[in-house]
Image (cartoon, rainbow, N blue to C red):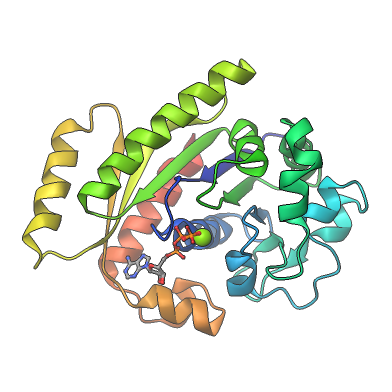
Length: 255
Ligand SMILES: Nc1ncnc2c1ncn2[C@@H]1O[C@H](COP(=O)(O)OP(=O)(O)OP(=O)(O)O)[C@@H](O)[C@H]1O
Ligand SMILES: [Mg+2]
């Protein structure tokens, strides 16, 4: 059965990767309830904290270390028909895997993704940390597509250049065509700030074959995070936020 894996990545902190991962997974789960798996690939465990599965029996690292079957580690999120393969923040083992066994297993995430497809999931969304270690590389080479979120500032643009170089290097090293890259998200755009408008216009000019999705500043993300809800469930999201998220879920969901 075909399943699409989408990695959300950028080697830069705090650009909205977790916000985008959880929100895109929630949007896809509205299309196919119960058949979207959000995988928390970040040792910080932020998307796990947000989606708040009731019981952490095991985590991503437990499966990677071969100590538990994928099926036994998948948990239900607190909302929206979403399933989560969690990562425990403080006491989690993902960092240990990343610096040890993971360095010798570049295709380890591929096993997880295949297992998720066999379980009947239609989509796998991978939330990555800003690092570029074993877990991030393994996640990128297991993904059909990668999407990068940036903030509307000059550092955002240079972050994209670094990301592209890293991705091309990784594809070459591992001789893979995985992780098609054609969508960029610009987060938290405030139309009252002149520079934001200029950056969005500049990006649109240079987008070429890239699809751009522009999200406004919206407090709904912080609220949803603290209340362990999806942005649909808070009832306070801006219309532009929901419209853009739905467009992204439809287009990225198609292929
Ligand atoms: N459109 C938006 N409007 C307002 N705030 C936003 C928006 N998008 C993201 N944020 C805020 O930006 C902060 C960082 O977002 P997030 O945690 O998703 O970044 P990240 O890239 O996952 O960070 P890290 O690199 O640490 O994993 C959060 O507090 C989030 O609520
Ligand atoms: Mg994050």
